[in-house]
Image 1 (cartoon, rainbow, N blue to C red):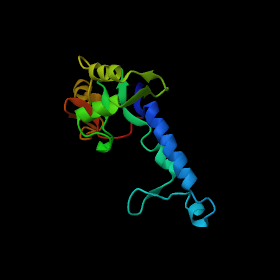
Image 2 (cartoon, rainbow, N blue to C red):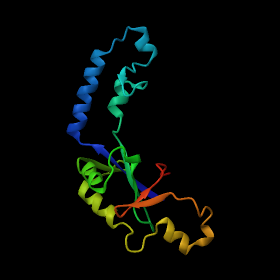
Image 3 (cartoon, rainbow, N blue to C red):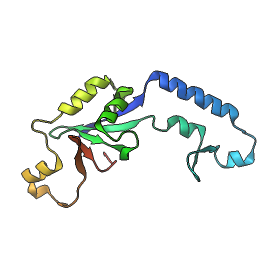
Image 4 (cartoon, rainbow, N blue to C red):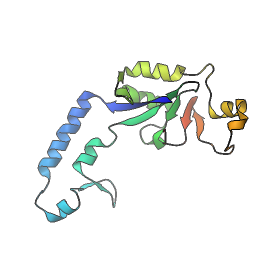
Length: 161
């Protein structure tokens, strides 16, 4: 069992999101049958994709950063490069928001980065070292679910259950 960590926007950013949401709601044509039948999905996010004001408000509001588990090195979630592509961008992303754990407890962003970088570094496992020590548990030896990016252990999957 481990603990998942998330980045959420700062309070001031949430106020800006709320103001934009209110503006979008004020602009909605709540009588138009087409708007109603499409769930007010009028905000274009691609040639054929649309979102509602609420979808826009909550989009990217809680971004999974990674997981710490006893006995393992910290496992970062790269989120497919959607929010950051380098370690420097990751740190900037974290520092420009707030960090919470899966229980809603807040953690200082700098302390989180320090904890994640130090978690399990001396004797923690990654998949390769775990399977070397426990070959009997290596049921899928060719299945690669993690890699290292700029020295960070990164999951190749977004499933952190």
